[in-house]
Length: 449
Ligand code: PEP
Ligand code: CO
Image (cartoon, rainbow, N blue to C red; front, side, top):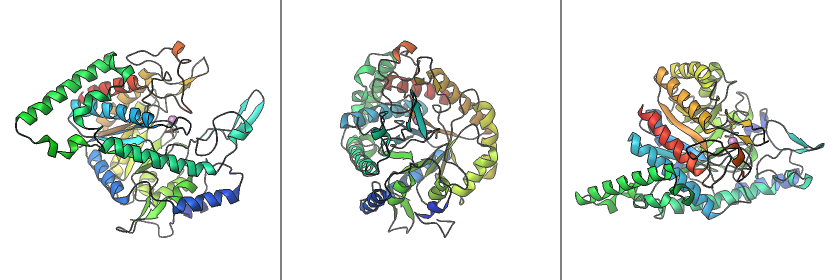
């Protein structure tokens, strides 16, 4: 329920706002936003409420959140196969986690709307030429040309349409037989199958098969168990371009509350979490579950103030705090924040993004992350939560189903010399499917410890 009666989907416009494109054509922008406001919702309020309830279970320690997907989804590289492969990795990771921890894995993709990127600088200079920074395909083009980098409001509509198609694919893949637990072997991607992680996954799939046969032999009618044949993968993205989010925000006829129907869950990034800022104001008014990234500059007071603003009713499942401190800092910086939030009584989900605090520029020029730093941050996060007696509720990971070489290390070691081979990301370096599966196995071990 709304605490602030002056809130409306447009009221963010009276607050200071950062990270918005300088759209060059106001008339075109207005037309596109009006057209978007007429389009059907991408998700439904009932689904969003179910996700909040599942997150509430996670907050209470009865589940684990796996939020994962692309750093920046691309318009140019969109295909059903790519979405399917992304789903395969998420399903594999979730099977590895659930099998070894015995806890349900709540799956939320960074998918079907993750098109906007916050940037540390408004412009980029190469060889003396300065252009607008690339802000994601929803705003401008990746190529370093004046034409590509000019923000184009028509891209907002393209984003909506691709998000709609992706939501459709997600529903088909997760409900249409592909995610049936009897298909568990088929989720191994070709380039993963023969590696150590792939073989470990094969063994696990064989054990699952055996367990299913055992249950059937005991007379359990497996065909009747919906949860064996379908999964839920919810959608999420950073709610960055507020005009777009506003246009997709609608009143739910049943509850009379506002829902941002662009995705099930939205998060506020490290660069847009100002307490008096437009992003926090906007998301305070919608009923969707909200995530907030907390980086090294966040203080315990900031975290508690964000909780008060975004979760005034202390509703379990409403708020997920995503720590992204960096491996070297998480143990020192996160502990006082976790303690302050715990003592404030807000029943948040604690999640760890072990990616964004561990990015660095390799001497070859590529932006990368090392798998060992990713694991080190996760391990620091678990020990902080353990010491504070709070549930380490989840992880937030950038990954792809493609065989890319963007992050270093992992079981099937990617080396610096490999970076040049398949570095395909539009923004940050992602774990490939092998590294992601390796992470899931190691994470299960951390959780069991
Ligand atoms: C991201 O999640 O892609 C991102 C930009 O993260 P952060 O806001 O934590 O830097
Ligand atoms: Co990123």
